[in-house]
Length: 84
Image 1 (tube, one colour):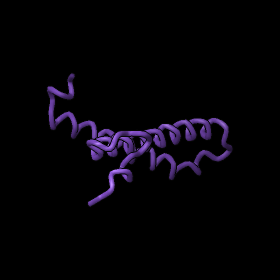
Image 2 (tube, one colour):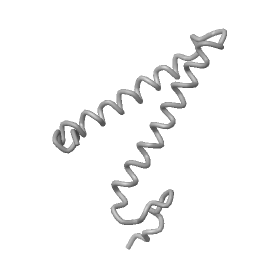
Image 3 (tube, rainbow, N blue to C red):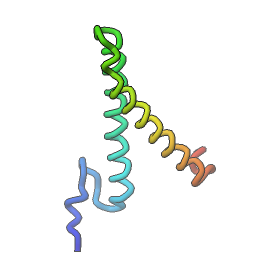
Image 4 (cartoon, rainbow, N blue to C red):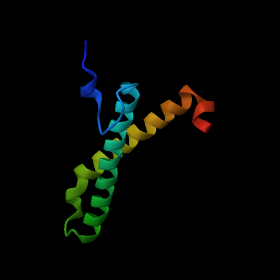
C-alpha cells in the first residue's frame, strides 16, 4: 500500500492525486516557460551577442509546441467540456 502523504504536494488534498499532480507539474513548467520568455526578451535587448540565445529560443519553441499539443489534445477529447 502506498502512503498517501507522499502525494500531498503544496497543500493539495490527497484525494484524486493524479489529476492534481498533473496540473501542478503543468503549472510549474508553464512558469518556467514564461520565465524563459522574459529572460530571452531582456537578453535580446541588453546582450551584446544575442546569437548566444539559440539554445534558449529552441527550448522556448519546443515547450510552446508541447503546451499547444496538450491544449489541442484536451480540446479534441471533449469539445463541449473544453468550451465551458
